[in-house]
Image (cartoon, rainbow, N blue to C red; front, side, top):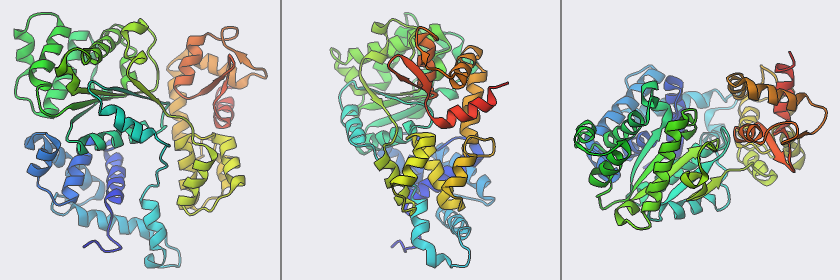
Length: 444
């Protein structure tokens, strides 16, 4: 029986995610979470594989990489048989860092609360996603700027799918290499190989490609119809960071057309009702005929800013006991941006800084948002046209008008990456944080 001081499952997941990120700069994927949860529950790899409809060999490989990353992060030999003890020691070590004169037992309730990583649910969105992904041939698109909670929502949808005994595959387009983007044939082969290896399908993709007739889109479709879809359980295929495909316009246009066609197949071809697509993206690809794109079909989920009640609720979960005054002060700087709000609350709760001091340093290179802001800066520096446009927006003393001062397409690109707000045909920095930081950075 679990004692009060032992890690809960959610605490374990969050701690492992942090440790793995330190080593790989990537958060836990769906398969890693499956393996970790199964191991946490004391299940064998065979049992985990059976429940997730994946091959035992694949589950073992995922587990091996997971324990290896934890070993590197913790500086000790971590295995499936001892990982809980190793994590418990690390958790207690972290908990002790919160202690001044009090003992760990004195502050145990607040430490547990902090390690639970409070999450503010968006009203009805999660249950709506569960409902939609359960529909035959579903196509669900989660659209939001950087660090708005897309990955968290994706994880919850996948967890739901697994609970319904669906097969799941998560593909992050960051995993594709330059060669995969050379042409449509290469990209579709990467796509199919990634899926078949995850599901441990024995039929060789290369052999199928060489023996099948037709173009690469036909070969891709027939592989799905012969080897992926004919199972009792539906399959949810998640495409994360689809934006990585957009610079490759010819491939993007063709592939997005393929996804739309497969979604429409479900209306007339029962086998395609097995496929459920979950797409995550920041931008909307507009270099394709809208009637050939998946972006005007299926179900779109747009994640928006937190409101003041949600911000206050999150602060209270971190024992800050904020009222309307503090909430307004923080939101005046960062609006309701989920990551920026949570980052500020964590800094104040865990590092002992004050809201006043945090807000003073927020738009500077030494503030708690420096990594987030530098990421936006690098994006702008990679696109000199958008950099010049955004510079005009943050430095202007007057309202910038769409179609008069800047083109609509450029305004939409800045909106999709979360830098600006569009209102009544005008455009302005989305948050005061961005205005202050980029005024300083772009003035020269």
